[in-house]
Length: 165
Length: 165
DNA sequence: GTGATTATTTATCATATGATAAATTTTTTC
DNA sequence: GAAAAAATTTATCATATGATAAATAATCAC
Image (cartoon, rainbow over all chains, first blue to last red; front, side, top):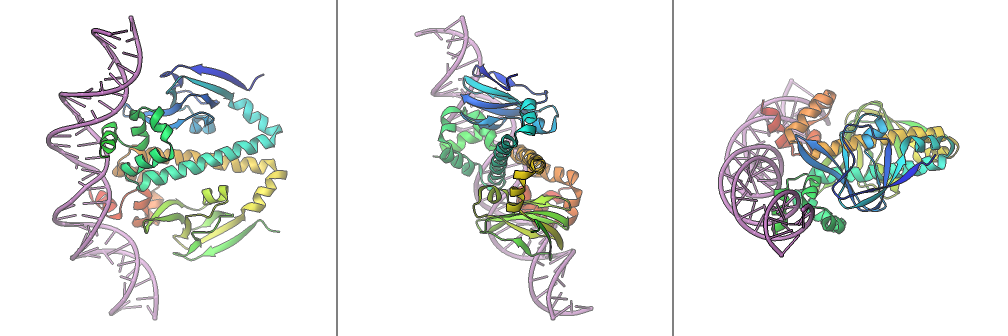
């Protein structure tokens, strides 16, 4: 039984929706996706992932609880969907695979900790400039309204920051 | 050769200092510690850990680079220091241990993602109240100046929030 | 226990960001 | 390619938080 399968999604469609337990880990083959959720009916982008990155709604995947997050395609996107149950079962016989997985989680953990730092004490403008510098492709491929909530500000505020040269 | 050893630290002393590569994972047996760093010469608390929690400066531990973070004892603290190199070597022969470690990292990852959400779109007051509710022991055992930077605000601002009812 | 140090609060003023509404630009659809 | 829809910017006003300084309270050292 195959562990992975390739799936295609049109721009603007949802790959996974809110309310179901996450049992899939995705790998972005082509395109861009985002994880998002709603706070007080406002759409908030938690993260973006481009080509060659893994995407999963970690909390649901690791706890088995229904996810409050959705995954959406920002461009036409080709994903490789990995059945997490099958993958995790493989770990019993292939500890090298489990190690690889562990390393990936470790790296994700480090990058979220760094993001906390940035949200903790950088101004919105600093965060925008850092993003611009670190990931210019984000600016090119992601609508500003998604970038704004990712940075923890409103779209209007982001517009103002961009205008202030 | 022992993998773990028990160490004691007086309140206010540093357990690990900035600039060295982290090769130790700690387990808090008694007391409270914090991970902190400096931004523009300002002391910022990244996280607290109480009894029965693991503490490590993840970025340095996982990348091998010198850490920009320090670990300090907030109370008199007894730590169990685990030699990470020895532990990681054990994973080669004990994949069950590696699995345990993976699960711990997964849980840490989930909690940092939740913290990002809170910093992304909650007001300082909401963050304070959430902390108060979720971890009343934090308020009892951690000086407010550390809590303030943990929440991403100044101490003065935290004082004001506390005073507003 | 007294003086010195450190932590916390209070006050004042400045500013970044939010909220709302409207104008403009860009993209999509047919 | 024109009309409609969506994204982005601009403007105005309100407010939460920062910066600084000073007052008070709590803790520590001897």
